[in-house]
Length: 259
Ligand code: CO8
Image 1 (tube, rainbow, N blue to C red):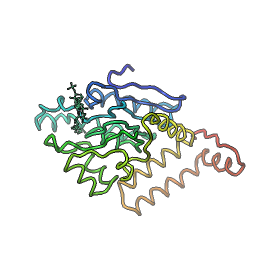
Image 2: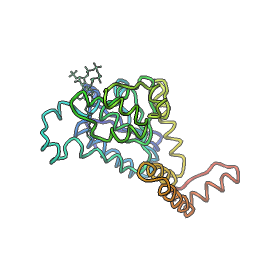
Image 3: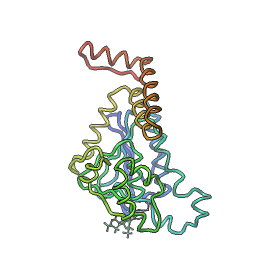
Image 4: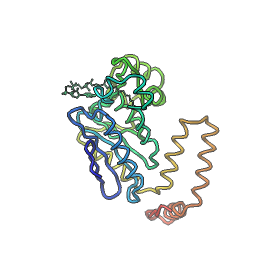
């Protein structure tokens, strides 16, 4: 499929890479971009060769937020009845393979929310995160007030949402918003390295790990632990578990078949 607002490529036939590509608008997220991103993510999720997906932007901007001119004139009725702005944002949550956000430059508003919807964030040292919606007379609308406190705690989330200030990459790493910070020119190398490592594991176990970690944000501890245990037990029905453990015992690399 030909896309106009994103670029799509694969690495080593194992990693799917989606690059947001509206450079003049600092990758502002409009309806078309979110639709195309959703389509590309679903296509990689369904592609048997692909074990991990990366979403990235440009050096200057991962994404500077939802497209402000596109939504400036909406009435409440437009926004609510048509579910405009928000309707195609949750596609990324339905992707079952891991999705890494490789963030350089601005990740603001919807851009920060999009990064947080990914499974983890690797940041370049020039990354800047923020929820500046308050300055526009609105609040985050794609999970920012919910995912940010879960990532960085109430104090910093309130600070970000109420002041609209930006957090640099170092602060984001200290606050656990991102998993790693690397020099800008090493960002894609680092993200692709992580994605290839993830792709080398059992896909079934990888999907189960993702589902189980995500469950930690949706349930209480004992329910979450039980969910994890059921998945853990279920993995003993897979050939990959037999292969992984046999490979360890026989001191050889595992060759997972994803069965
Ligand atoms: N939407 C549309 N265009 C944008 C956006 C945006 N969010 N951000 C930047 N641009 C455009 C600018 O208008 C400018 O275009 P032009 O050259 O035609 O004037 C171009 O990108 C370059 O921008 P700047 O000249 O401003 O570049 P600077 O380097 O001076 O500044 C900033 C960069 C700091 C990123 C600045 O552009 C900025 O503050 N942008 C707005 C950031 C913002 O407020 N983001 C939040 C938007 S609201 C939101 O995301 C709500 C999410 C709700 C999600 C709901 C769905 C679920």
